[in-house]
Length: 261
Image (cartoon, rainbow, N blue to C red; front, side, top):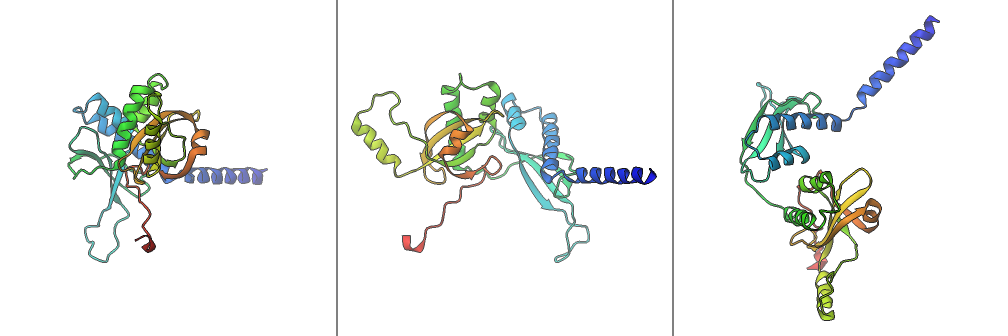
């Protein structure tokens, strides 16, 4: 009987140690980001309500760098600790908001240490203009189809960007002449159909904004927008270009072959 109790105890100990080791870096990073978000909101009374909502709902950037020991010299190993700033570029603010902390790369023991407001050289990506068009469209035309939380998802989060094959809409009001529709079709054939997609709830609904542009979203103009099921989006997806996690990075176009010149 004593052997059985010991075996059960060892089994439970093994299960507990396995379960404690199953938490991935993503879990620790999410927990650290929430700590940073709470710290920023507490120490930034100057932010407007819209800017506070941006911080609450928008993913930050993680800026990391090595921390060198005091005796480090060129060629010597660096410390396992890293300085990691959880950072938001908030609309309407000239400075970026960085919450500084130090931990290992997993961020398991990351805690906010101080708030840094730093002015970086600003740059814009084509997705910024595309998102602005999608948000204006959703406000003007989809207000009766979206709940408050769904609209805020579009307003404050980044979308998926897909190359798509939806059927375009050329004359929703029925006012164009056949030759005008033909000209529109011919113009779109020279561009790539790219769609911005927000997953707006857990029921499989998406907000989709279909448009045409160069392959990197340059010059993107919206063709139509609406609420769709995930299955409809999947059926029209040619390939995934960006997810919300990397939407703030440029879309890399394939390099031209030498034979193309």
